[in-house]
Image (cartoon, rainbow, N blue to C red; front, side, top):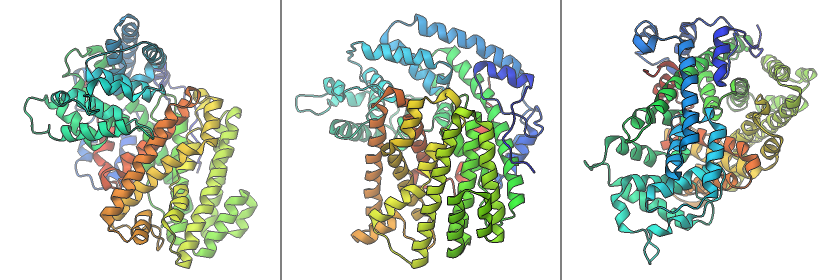
Length: 581
């Protein structure tokens, strides 16, 4: 049995797909052209074991497509290449600031911005350098959001023209639902000490909530409003937003048909690749699980891949996604061992072995842990073999974070063993590390080659303020979701919710309100990091993606990672169902 990462394929179809810069998933096992094998593996995973209609859907996926849907992958790539050239021409010929902003926004929301990174960077840099005054709230808010998302400093004073002498927003803009929605989304990129943007969120939210029953609003705009009220656009998971936005974009006045066609082709081409990745990682996990023989370990390989897919959706990240998913798998192995099975003495031995990171340390371990430990060391060696020599230091940093996580898992086990009741502050300090985010932040740098600059990597491993903010968001949202489900956190150790309730003698709802406000504070820290240095922007955006993971999995007080029925429809949409062309 081999746990090796896949080797690079020379398959001509995959080579053709690479022409658009798409990640290539090599052949770990034979991958049939129609992906039936991959879909079978996907279908039998824990994530979809309760789905009643998935079998028929998968079986008919290729048999029932006709016309343009049945066209070959080769045709789709060639057509996408042609459309890409036409979109590049749009960037060159569009002269108005508003038109250029609308083009960038559409390209981003349709999920094809990875094809036009240089064009987008140039366009936004130029827009930032130019003065812009407009009576349109939508246009002003759109500019604000696009520039802040890309690391440009923009003053909230740009919204003053929509306020009266009393400093409050004019009542007239309440009749502009599109402008209100844009204001609401833009204001969620606020940083600390920007009360005017907090006021903008409150004002826009109040009036947007009253629009759902209005008949004079276009249905697709109402859908966008409802989604934003659930999850503001800057915090939404990009790929799912793309799926929602594609049919809506086609209903917008002045939409550009070639953008929509390219988005559909690009989504389907990437879906082919991601399905192969999912098959490869599922087979790897199946072999690893059988080798270790640990029945107490949760089967979360599909969920783990979805996490990596949310965090590393961009092009050229195939190797990074595979490594990231495997690291999550070993986090689960370690977590379940510390939390659910091992005695306290066995926990201490496991941590000692991980701190040594040496095969000779196997002598300290009980028999059932030995294969787990050997598999961990072997997998990291395979990471080293598949990463360029210049990237070895990134694996070293990842090892150190893995060792730190182990030490903190042991501390939680010690607290549980001693029946220790931590304060809220103590629990936050410990559980931000056991949220696994510091390890995951470093892990996202492995296997990305030149996609991450030296400056960006150094920021990712040294500037922990934004990383800890992301970790707190993840921990707080996870703990609220777990509390709502009645799931106890790590044996007898109280969660942050329980610690806050006990310490302040308040109800769970009061604790939720307080912790929700803390989550908002942490988002401000991440937003601030976006505008600090354009040299490290890719690393900051990666941290932001991990915070979006928390919203994706734990939003609305649910835990879609532990209780994966919440993910069934989402995963089918992302990996199984192609978009009709």
